[in-house]
Length: 118
Length: 111
Image: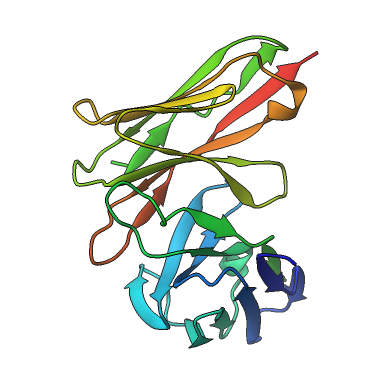
């Protein structure tokens, strides 16, 4: 009965490969996110989707392409992996997008995918 | 200038102590505020939302000062299990739905 799940938990791959990370939430939330946490533990938003529509796309290389087949899923595909892509990637969801007062925009995170590019 | 700034610590406090963390944010248009905790090699977990009037949840009290653009978290009667990194989060709630995380404040509660 995991609320936000991600697969795989660990991913080790070589430079130049293409890989995907999957995320699913069973909370009935409208909004989903992808975050990257680097080696310095800084957590930075990459993408935000609301009802399958992209609403934020931070300065992320276009090698990263999110796909939301439905409201409960947000996958992340990465082409031509580079050493600098090594990080922990977290998926999150919230009932709705941010709004004044914050109610409903609290985010719930998946367990993370630890990506190592060699 | 970073959107959200926190003292990284570390804070090392004895059990039972009271500890306070502050966080400042740069964008006055920020609408929503949160505190998360993150244990080593785990995902961030929501600790509490921060409302304008301030709010309390057991041993935890959060305050928001919009005029000075800072958020605080007070932990009373610290427990060993409170040891974690505490992340301050700010949401602009604009069309881009921007969320900004601080770099976190590390807390270790010592027996």
